[in-house]
Image 1 (tube, rainbow, N blue to C red):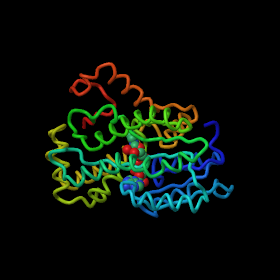
Image 2: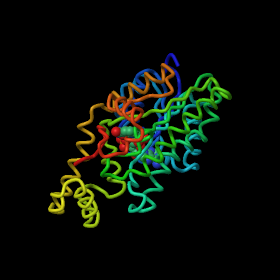
Image 3: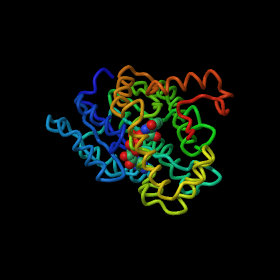
Image 4: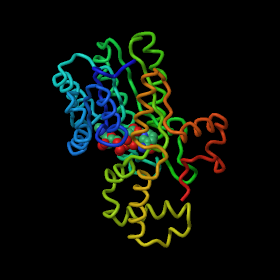
Length: 315
Ligand SMILES: NC(=O)c1ccc[n+]([C@@H]2O[C@H](COP(=O)([O-])OP(=O)(O)OC[C@H]3O[C@@H](n4cnc5c(N)ncnc54)[C@H](O)[C@@H]3O)[C@@H](O)[C@H]2O)c1
């Protein structure tokens, strides 16, 4: 796709992080955008963030939608068609995601299932529900966000990471298979799988809020579980008071957002450049590129303690 100007894009999870930056950069390039997210507050933040493009006449519409629910996506499709007066979209960014369901054995099943149904189900249903609108476009592109956890199902030897990894592997496998399907059956639609490394977004904080609440509001049980996990990596953690655990959790989710090697804006730029070049495989960040090479070099050793990954959580 040579230019985004005058096209119509849908960005799921557009109320925060990478999605918000995608909306802004698309709009700045003259692309009309529909964004969706779980809360109106998140959507309003992105609308404010894109004030300049809106003032310049770019159409940005915001929609509350849960991408894990087909009926919610169908309602979104109707709203997009009405508010953009269109029978098609050109770009579908299946970006919404959360983390959670780390241990298959110990975490609550509802958390595991919810993580999987958003991270995988949201991509699958997004493609199902919006495919008719993509097929009607003269030129289209599907961009599905996986992760480095779509090729390395791990955060190091001390941390379980099952639901998110399973979902991100599914996104990657599905999108790679779609490549051939689209080339055979809808060659005017490109396909890309996005695999970000560590990107500076509030995803850790957003996920914590979803499952547990604010770090300062963690229950005694939640604090005890966190302390126990940390004590696997550092025996000194066992002696931490409840309030010390709560403030360390706050520090770590903020460090995830503020201490990343790649910003959300840089990630969005990499993704959009990849789409313009019609790259089907978009690694985001030097850390993602390095991990991809390391896992390919030693796929068996990738799950051993000695495997050196920038993504291993060691402390
Ligand atoms: N930040 C990273 O380091 C990183 C790394 C690899 C992959 N990713 C992936 O990138 C994508 C964007 O993540 P981010 O870091 O910008 O996170 P983020 O939390 O900043 O943004 C994700 C947005 O998705 C929304 N969302 C969650 N569930 C939803 C649902 N059911 N329906 C609609 N919206 C929903 C959230 O409310 C949030 O606004 C996700 O798929 C994530 O898994 C992020």
